Image (tube, rainbow, N blue to C red; front, side):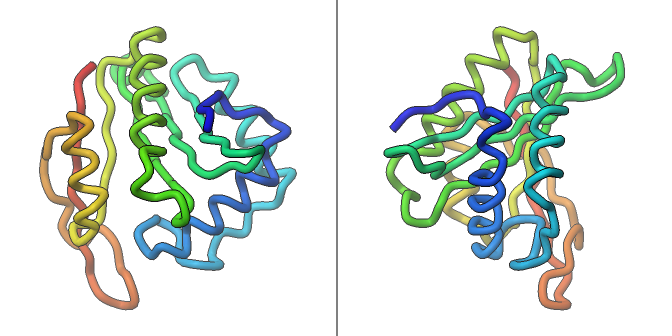
Length: 164
């Protein structure tokens, strides 16, 4: 397994992986809600790669994308030092160190480009992800109450951060 920077040519595989991860029920998109086309995905990747404080790393196993971590950097002077993260790992590869490898690569990149604050959210009942984030050094900052509606039920998220 290798972790590398995403390439525009990964767009279709990245979209397929994103749609698969959406099925977990723990991502922002509901299963089947994502309507991104491969061409739109290419443009998004190009945009992210053109921003000095944003990045997507992918985990690849035998030529197949199995995980990703996205960092979306702030867009104004006061928050360019921070990035919001989104992590996704194919369910067949969870618990095998993929997320840890993705985080490790992202932490190195963040130091290289001057990102000093990383932040993310996690649905409060996603205990495995919450524990992973804590293991990776993230600190609970607060709880976003009724931040999502899942199957018509108001759902809370934890907000976590890590200083680099």
